[in-house]
Image (cartoon, rainbow, N blue to C red):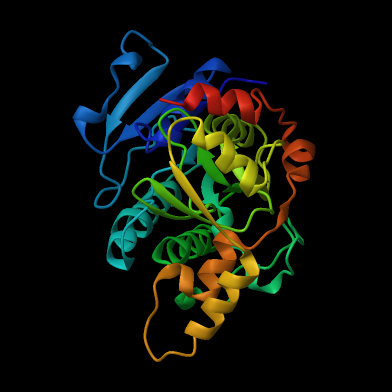
Length: 314
């Protein structure tokens, strides 16, 4: 493995900062792109292998002098379509324009999401992998899913020398345990929808490692998920040991799905988990495969679910 110069966008974010650490651990030089100067991390001080750069991708193109690969983690995880258009799509467009302006190839590793898949097409407990079709009706999904679908399309249309798309599961780690694959949270109460079906987890260090491996060895498309993917009931039981939720109200998957199907007959726009495509994407009991992650990137896990959860608890 030869050392590379890797730009990491969103370098101060949860995934971004762990990716900076993973890249440095493997001997790469890092250009750490952050939106604001106050986002530059103090733990980067004194590391001559990290060059912080302030650039708001939503409005500006970054300078790519000497950069061989870009790992693009900058994106908005929340917000409406307008927010996603500005912070995810405009940012990606400016990055692609900067890459295309170079007179040499610059590889791109895109941190995408498994949310782009069409889970309505899968039967309960079916296996989701890279051959699963993507969502054909983005207007029925949430703004995040629509943005990730559009972001992938932008990158594919750019016809880069090497584009690696990594569709990442529900990232967790210290300070971040909640994800949308559990149910409905209301204060100390969790309405747990379904007990079975894997939670498509990805520990943040595993995610970062996969992104850096793809920077070293480009791949076309890989799902990034942990080996240890607990079923929903096991995850919630382990989560309760942190003190939340205090109370869990179990609701069978089939009952909630029937409720959502009935509600879909109403002539109004419903909340997310009463819209069938959103419900199926988040809570349908499924199995997941990360075989390509092992086979194509030689990825291996570094921490088990139980150990990771214990480490992440406040």
